[in-house]
Length: 100
Image (cartoon, rainbow, N blue to C red; front, side):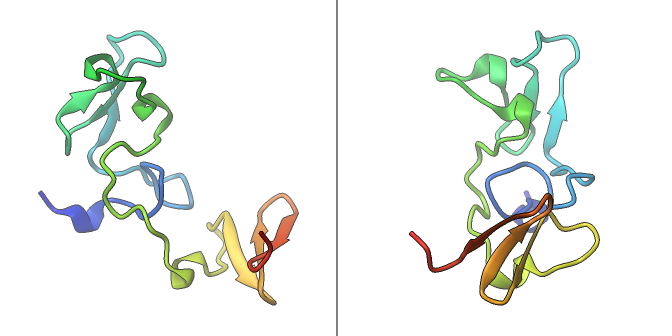
């Protein structure tokens, strides 16, 4: 399977949230919060031995979890951008990258 098409970060979608991972889907015949499915893992929330958040598009595969700084550039679809050594999240939240 092609892991290069799996979004970077901890979610099963790209920053614009309009483009889900091609391996992610919902199974409408399963109960809410148990209906996420990952075809990369070939598993759904209802099959996991531990709580799973695939239904909420939280990545379970662990592929491409790290985000590079160049992935956080500002554009009209991005939720996060870096400017003046601060991370900006749409909605006005700002914090310094060097703060702990």
